[in-house]
Image (cartoon, rainbow, N blue to C red; front, side, top):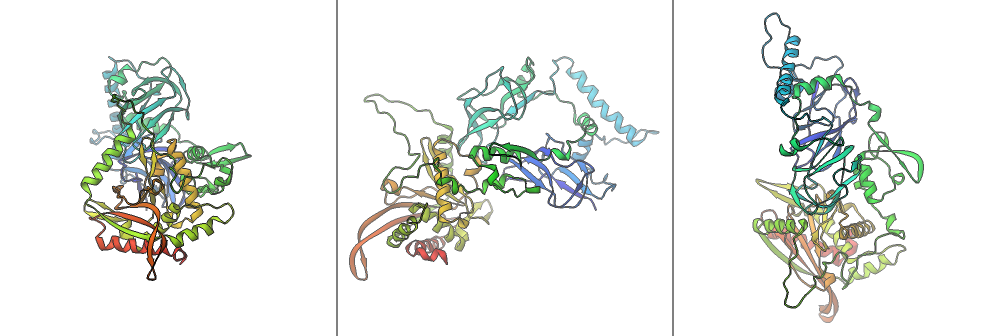
Length: 561
């Protein structure tokens, strides 16, 4: 029996999806696990696998087109199977250009369909005779949604100006989001005809950013129409698409040559860009996709441990009392003169998000003092190993991740009428940058060892300072850690990084008199403050989490049990 495949919801903010590429065409055999298509969401391009075996009988969203979540994407069934009933409904009718009207007497259903599909085309042509004809190869570029919390973007820099030639893959501009500055690539070839957001200005997501097309094309009507150009109705588009052949299956894998090898590497376009941004040698990766193809998750799961040993590795994040990388820049002081600094996009969003968190989540705080003597000894022994150097912050992150395994309620989020218990432990690490604060995320931190945690934190802290972090590296945290111990701060409380339900504030290690076995001796202590959202984490739950965390830090060997 035929199976209807609908447009999947690949992110919590996704409302519609664009088919970036079909890897199968109608009539092709499909096996469970085959990559049917590459779906572009509001965040990234993702491979979409088939869950069924059979033949691809119908494509509901053509390559390059978008459709709402849960609309018909494709139908898979037995070769020659009748699927006319499955394509019924408004969306399918529009996709095929089929009229709901009853055929006239003596007229076959197909003849009636053909008549009806030509009528709207004639009407549109008549209406458009009064305006300049817009070539179909003109492309309107809108402000992209580069993170799940982004509502507008600021153009930090244009790398092209009006009149410049643009090729697919060229960096059009640098877009500043609420989290980072990211390169924005062109997906089209042509000439930059119009810039909708000037350098230094901001505009809402989905507003007109630029227009690309043939040199000399008049796009004034598109600009005045809010970025919309005259298009043939869906009936005509369906007729045209039905006559055109879908790209051959042999085009489904992009092959990329590398400088270090004459071999060609199978890799998806998104994975290729991510690897280039991170400076990852493709030959050192093993793809988990179809036929060994390197996909997005292979890049995300890559841990630059070996790279940290090379001469070009980022400098180690300062420890102890030294200022960390990305410390806020000092403002110049002029006696008797006030000055103003325009808020960056990052600063505006920080203000908005933290205000929302503080005013909506009922915060409460738990503080505990930890004996760090054994942790200090353990760190010395670990750092005595060749090519190994970890910080106390690395040890705390590891202990937090393991403690969250035992207290899953702390690894949860509040959402309207329910609590979401996360299946992964993703620890966000607060990093200071000149514009404010960003929180890169260590995915599956509970499965990482000390060396992996250290390498990842150093890598992301270094790139955070230069605004080199990508949006997906700052999304998906389930718990956060903020450390001001390097500034000598002994105790402080933090605002919860929503949608997390808790954040741990880490103070400095202080040498002071302590009572041990009835005697006053010199000891090393550190204070931890846990801010909790009372809607999710009750006081007893938060206290039990801190007890477990204390055990792991005061008895480091227990982390191995």
